[in-house]
Length: 448
View 1 (cartoon, rainbow, N blue to C red):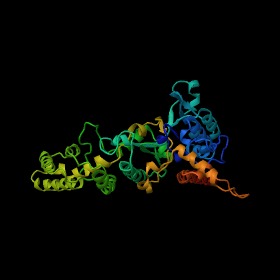
View 2 (cartoon, rainbow, N blue to C red):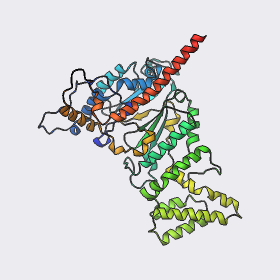
View 3 (cartoon, rainbow, N blue to C red):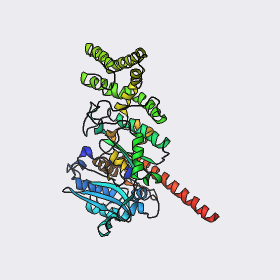
View 4 (cartoon, one colour):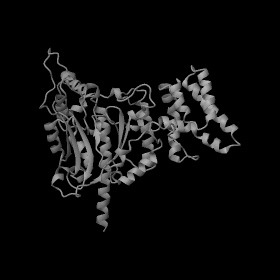
């Protein structure tokens, strides 16, 4: 979990790391005296983090998630955690034997950010006392990182760390395409999609065989899923084969349904010559490029949707007239689809996925249901200050509970509740498989 707290606008909560704490801890009270004018949004960051770690952080389920069992395993005890502390102090190679140890350290240090690392041959905190070569990474979840800044050459609504509901649809497409490919093509089951807390999404693949993949195997998966290739200086970055692989065909079907709205309407990329010149550079036929350029310069007021219709029509016409030149005709057959892929297909951070020992920075964020990802709005995710306000309001308005009535967990008093329930179900799904494997192994042992 990486609760990175910067400003109020950047303080988002990650339910992938939030689970119900066993009881509401009250060592640090949130209530402010009436009439003081104090507000949770005016609290210093370290105070916000103190309340967060004391009352909301889901220590037990966080532990269960990274431990993958109800009894201690090396998946947790030999896992590296790294902390960002005040005054730009960065502490690596932290490890813990239990969620109690983790809790004690977080409450002591109040890190503004936690990075999750690999599982090593020995406990990371013992690294300095280990002979050279004995401390090596052995496993890590397969993680995908899609960052909105990688779309800056495409999106016109925002840039850098800024995100709006229009450009967020690029993340929706990425989730839909990668989720289907990882499940259908590789058979992975436990995919946790998480809003990174600021400008993108992470996918944690928690299946056992995914965690044990070598760097070479991870690179092979990335190569299989990578379609966009080339840097900012390369105009055409997608080259599709004549006959599409079923995975590419499946992705194409998704892109066709989103491209018109995202690229042509929301981003309006053919609205001006700067935008349409980039798209025309993806057409490997000078005559076709010139025909479209002349037409759009003659009537630049035409909408992006109209200009896209022109492009598709001109490509079809050119292919028909080039029958005597099959090489030129073949080069144009996939151009329409190649442009769709270049402008809407997921852009992957290879370093995050291909190296077992890569530290993934975990901000305070929330999980995303891939089945409902089109409804996710990052601006509706509560900030830490929002959560504290909600807790205070709840404490002031709720009637006294009857004797014997269940005491609510603090997260249940906030807008985090649905996110936490989703993550709770995800962890329970992993545990069901762990129990089933143990049961099957026990039966086999009895038979022998």
